[in-house]
Image 1 (tube, rainbow, N blue to C red):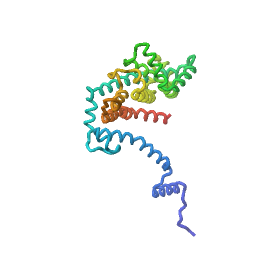
Image 2: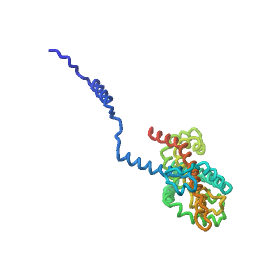
Image 3: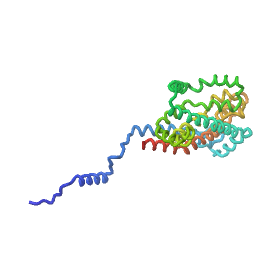
Image 4: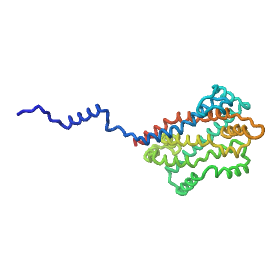
Length: 308
C-alpha cells in the first residue's frame, strides 16, 4: 500500500523551522531584553541630561525670569543671544581672556602631559631596565594621591621659585599625569607587538624612528583616551589656579566664573546669575565638541581589540 507522506530530511526540517521562526518574528540570535537594566539606563540618561537641559533653558532667561520662573521651563522673554553677547562683552570682554587662558593651559599642559605619558608609558612597557618594579610602585602611589593634597606643597615650591601669578604655575603641574602614564603603560604592553619592533630594528630603524613611525600609530586609541582625560582635568581645574593666581587676567574659566558668581554676595552686591549660567554653558561646548570629534578613535580601538 503506497503513501503520499514525504519523509523530512534534516535540511528540510531546518528550512521548515527557519520558515516558522520568520513567520512568528522570532530569531535565535536576538538578544534578550532586561526590563530592569533598561529602566536603570533610562534613569541614568535622565540624571545625565536634566542638568544640561536646565543649563540651556536657564541660559535663555533674563535675570528677573531666572529668579521668578520654574527651573525647567522658559521665562517670559527669550534672551539667549542677548545673554551670550553680554557674557562676551561684560567687563571689557574678560570672558574671552579667560577662555584664551584656558585654551593655553589645555593645549600646552594637557598636550604636553599626553606626549610625556605616551613616551614614558611606551618606554616602560617595551624596555627592561633596573628599577622597573620600583617605578611601577611609585606610579601607583602617585595615582592614589589626590591632586588637592599636593596643591599646597606645590604652591610653596612655586612661590620660592617666583613662579606664582604666571602661566607656568598652571602649565608645569599639568604636565605631570600619573594616571595618563599608567594608562599608556598598560595599553602599550599589548598594543605594540614585540615582533614588530624587532622587525623594524632588523631593517635598520632607530628607536626614535620606531617610536614615531610604528608605535604611535598603534597607540592612537590610547593616546586619544589619555588626551581626553588630560583635557578634561586641565579644563575643569579649579583649586590649583585658585591658589596660584591672583591676577584676574590670568584666570581660567573655572576661577573667573566663580568670581562672577561671588559678586552676588557682600556689600554692594551685583548679581549677574544670567551671565554666570550662560558662561557655564559656553564653557562646556568645547568639551562636548572634542568628545564628538575624537570618539571615532575610541571606536577604532575597540574594533581592533575585538579582531585580535
